[in-house]
Amino acid sequence: MKFDNVHMSEHSPRMGNALTRAIGSLGLKLTGWTLVGKMPDVPKFVIIGVPHTSNWDGVSASLAMLASGFRYTFLIKKEAFFWPLGPILRSIGGYPVNRSKGGGVMDQIVALFDSADKVCVGFPPEGTRSLVKQYKTGYLRAAYAANVPVFICAFDGPNKRVVLDRLMPLTGDMATDNAAIKAYVDEHWTGVHPERQK
Image (cartoon, rainbow, N blue to C red):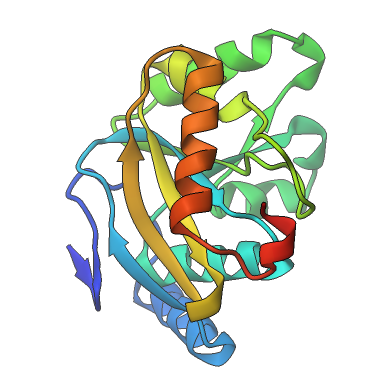
């Protein structure tokens, strides 16, 4: 499936309809951002949005996914899923996680990946818009536990593009993989606020 200059894999999890895609497209047009690239040809993966240096990252990514009809799941503490917010969060990809279980969070993530044929779970590895020396490793722990790859969704600040970039090779060594992914992002992509990146 193709959306303008964006290629969706047949394995890509989908959501929405013509109306929601039109809303996303209009939002991108009004904010000046575009979506380019290609989703990986795999049915299950972790996706990370990097480099995260601005509030516009989340806005542009959400509009881009809405415009393309791509569905990604994001984790939220279960306490947020009260009426009427709960159904709304679920409809846009929110997934309730019970953080009181401690290490059981990874079990919940694995169960999420096992629950459907097509699943993409999103993580913000910086965890902040401020400068960080290394990424938080939750996204890698999730990928290892579920035995799925990691895909880069890059924020190209200077050109105002959300770029569906590439799958990153993983060695299984957390420190090595985490450092390699950040080095790749820092070398190839510049965020909205470069001074917060490296």
